Length: 387
Image 1: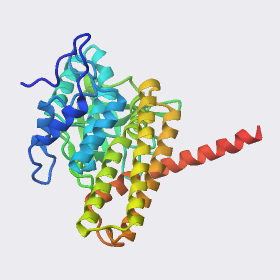
Image 2: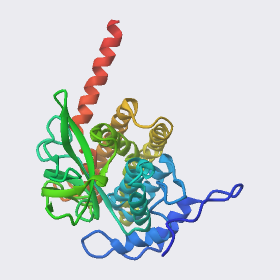
Image 3: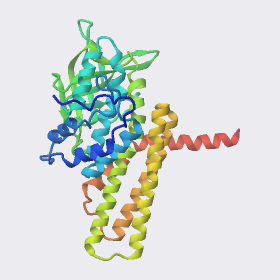
Image 4: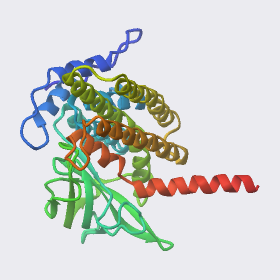
């Protein structure tokens, strides 16, 4: 069995050049065939030690901090031209480090959690997270999926529905957030790790969640799904506070990496189309150069978000910063598409290439929550002036 990555580096030896190693792994990966998740391609990355860099595997601590995870996710997206693959890689690092990693210290869970992390690093197991629900989003007030104790008192029974589960169609295991009780009139939530083959768990297609192949999205229906007690993860009754809220902020902080990879792919696609036409006007080249310079400048924002996550962890300040970063990417994408249309590289109303549609999709996710934070920030500015 290949190791997840090289053993811990000895003292005094130079650190591995992970971007170079990732480039080599991507260049030598087998072709992606078929319409589903490319298991062979993914396993190749695992054999090259590229899938477990962001989380601890066995005795090896994480090899990549948040900055490097975001950087490598950009590299995967750019090399493949598929935002969904970069996001799939990033999500596995995030769930492995921030959700499963802390559980390896828990008695009764450390064994199977460590085995799952090792399988993820080898490319043998894919993990998904199910929080949102149809018509409710991820707001705790509106979530309905419930977990009740079974007749033995030693396990749980889950019933409900989940929506927009990233990596859901291909996942081998799924973390599901469910209401497990109430305290002082407020819902208490727990997270449960379910095998995707659990009886009563059904994956359903969601026609509103098209794109981001091969990451894929689906809905879930849970009907009397039985889960043993040791598959309840995290502090009891605090699943929303310790998993759902942090993961949203962490994902947004790391997301700039794969977004920048897709944006670079978009620019290079445009440059190739212009080169095929022959000579380009100076205005066209100047505007393309301006987009490239703005793209390069956004890397400082990407690194600042990742540094803040690494140094301070998730929190309100990070959540507000990610909204600002998302706005910058939205404006860049709008300017890029306007330029593409002006140069007839993208026709208004015509089907756009997949990577452009995926960029639009990701930049539109959680727009309501982003607008709420924008309003909060505006209100804070007015309040600060009235003091």
